[in-house]
Image (cartoon, rainbow, N blue to C red; front, side, top):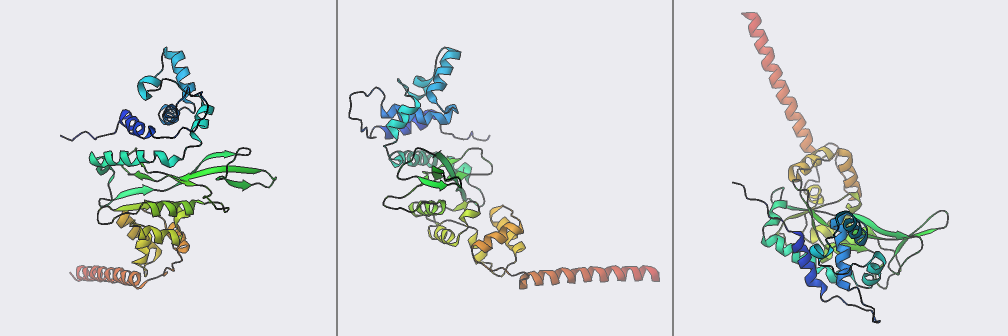
Length: 317
């Protein structure tokens, strides 16, 4: 009988989060502290479960339709702050203060063998890297904002983030890592970019190849040589390995090698763009491919010769 897959429950996630909320700073100086920082974090966290941009509005609608809400029973909220109050309470608090929740959750996932459900391609883990924009405004900005200047003279301020997640072809769920924010770094005037953020994340998260095999997945934005080299130095697998160890291969052969190693098939055009970004020259017709072609031609000649002999023998009978 197959064992039922172990999954982490909502209550366990909230329990892990609750452990970290006790030490969050509260910089308010006045006496009006009706809403706690803990309630603000839980209300913000609840958005991922309710699929509603406002937890307070969601609870009001639920109470209106069903006569009760689940803020207290599900999240332990006695008082629910509104959106503006949540922002006012949480904006001064660095996000890294709750990153320990990720590590606690990962430890639980490994201890309960949940991570085994995500292993594939010769016992490897796949981490997808991608950037996304989560805030923009033409009016409100902060010292860490990046900005875009438009032709009409207006400026849009924005924040982006790189979100590394463990994925698997057979799973609809993903496992999140702490994000890396794309923002102006302290003391810097130059705008930040996704490539720089990915490099920071790689430096913070090295891998011991002997203990764990991880392959990074990403779009062609990450195909810069500096990122690929850093990924390999930090212990990750990457498509550059296939190119380096088969530098006499054609694009078609590199596509075959990639599919053989990772199970992923890309077109010759995509492989060509990858090699261009990495400054690798690929032979149009390698010695290996010529040897394969000669072998196919020799086999065809042998088959044709046998067929001619058979026809001659039949005609002589």
